[in-house]
Image 1 (spheres, rainbow over the protein chains, first blue to last red):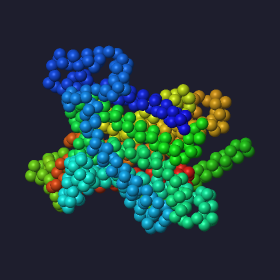
Image 2: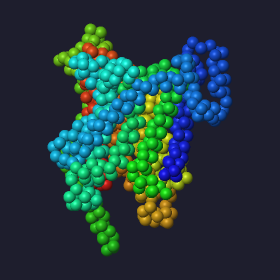
Image 3: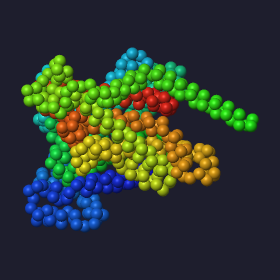
Image 4: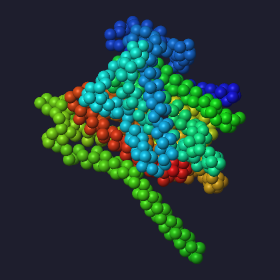
Length: 316
Length: 299
């Protein structure tokens, strides 16, 4: 197991390296001098010069990269001249709402998507199956921001049941918290619910076709046991993959949904930063979210090994 | 002489066989009703974006202060926006932009991705470098990388195409590479090498055609995704810049007036869902046809 973990972690290093290069280059792709852009139009020439010196913009590009990346390793993501605080602090102060939103959407994907997939698989070919899969296909085709707008139109504008937007932290009470988050979470989670349901169905169907299930059935094991004890466990790997991948998608999808509902999370932060050309924040957020995304996928990878010993033994 | 005749006969049989295969393919495609619906939607949208501008009578940029936020009526079938511009004409011109971006991204990503995938599969040294770069790009969540690139390049339609192409090239490269790796091991490729065919010839004339079917399937899904991401970027104000209409930035305007003008959200929204649904249905159908393995797994 140790060797398995080590191997997976090592495999990530080149990926993280490429990611950091791309993020680093993005700020250098911008037309114009980064120092001038960071300080804004009101900066004097001396200020720009000082910042250029401080950022090491006069050094060769590979030295700049080394300087920047060693800062990142120490948790220093740079300084936002617009927010007047370190980028890391800005990110942390915006993290709460995004994580809340993503977790709520993920919970919905698990609690709704998996049961729907099981229902569809066990009633394969029936009208229930077909209509469920039809709805799932629609769910995949409606982007989250669009569903968000439609929900606002129906539940906030027409029915006036829910607030149009805004955010209340969990500390203000669970009910209030959910009242503000439920629409964004549905908007964000619908695609995940649909993907999870589809994957659960196809993965379960594949397992139900195998010989050990036939053997279990012919032994007279109850159908309920066959599905929940034997089949589901073996069908779980692909489901887990989808859940893991979608969690990363949720974090970034939150970016778009947050702007609709005016939630002060990471997504709104990056969109606002694009608007005010605050490149150090853009760089920091992209790097932070991508690292998180890669890390979550690593955890999922390692979980495979726990759930299914075949995965970890194959690696040897 | 006899041998030549035989050969001609063989060619005729072969071409007949190809014709039959094609007919079978078409018949099987049309047996899949959902895929046909998808194709119909796509054709409708293409016709809308090409022929639509010839039919409409309103200028999509023409502002009329008196007509601001007019509800759908007999003059403005889908209503007007906050500048009094006709929504129907903006949606039709938006179709041109959205479908155009989708097509351009799918095409560029396919061509570049194909080259990357083919060369990676053929030259071991390149493989490691190219595939690590692809892994790195794919490690980014797509929308996030697109936003970062747009922030760096500046908002314009061409930059949307460029950013999205960069985002999706690895998805094509991966698929092409794995298909090409299989073909590479075939005996006829070995025979070509033994005959002294150039690498270029082997790669582009003999390996490339065999990677086309997974590539086309993947390109269809990229088309759909590019439409979604373009709409999302424009909706966030980081995509197609105003005053050019795209479904995404009509929604961006619509969001601001959501309390008074539902039509500005609903109609462009329907267009986005319809187009994505069309490409997803079509792509699913193609995949079932071209890739027997997933076909079995699904059914």
